[in-house]
Image (cartoon, rainbow, N blue to C red; front, top):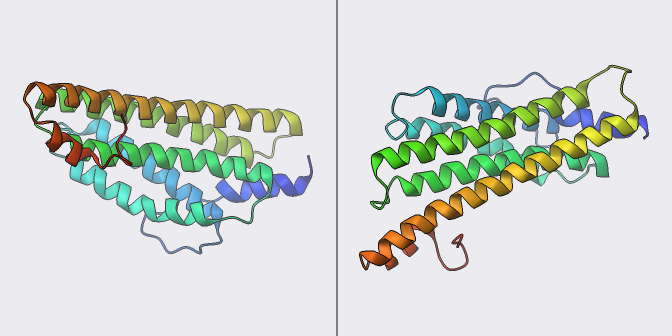
Length: 210
């Protein structure tokens, strides 16, 4: 693997993590990727340490909205070589996990089919899945920024592929977790003849998850 490919990969994650409201350049994938990692970390930490998941969700939502600026700009970066794009896609998947968590849990908080105790459990479940994805992203950052000569080019790319596949599995798991929770609400709404309200809450026929 040519050295230029690794320089491109490194450009995605090699930088000190900035604050979510820092200024950055659209063509600087390093700051964008680091911003997403920082945002995901903060969302998990806030979700897992607050005493009341529901009461403090607004703080989680604020952190997501700050990090989303990085996510949207990194998504628009297109001038990357193939292997660097795999790193970019992995980072964006973690952003997708954050997005599914914040957007759908926010709707569930307005769904009377879930009790406060159930919402706390659901919120904790999302936070745990996000944390696993974030830990994999940290591992990816170590790999693509490492100057160690102990790994061959193939070994390094094999690890990048493995991390990508594992993050993709967590993405699919979060999507499945979301589907199942919404399905529970749908079943409960049918018993109460309130199905349309749930459909309106979670989106149109093109947007809904079930």
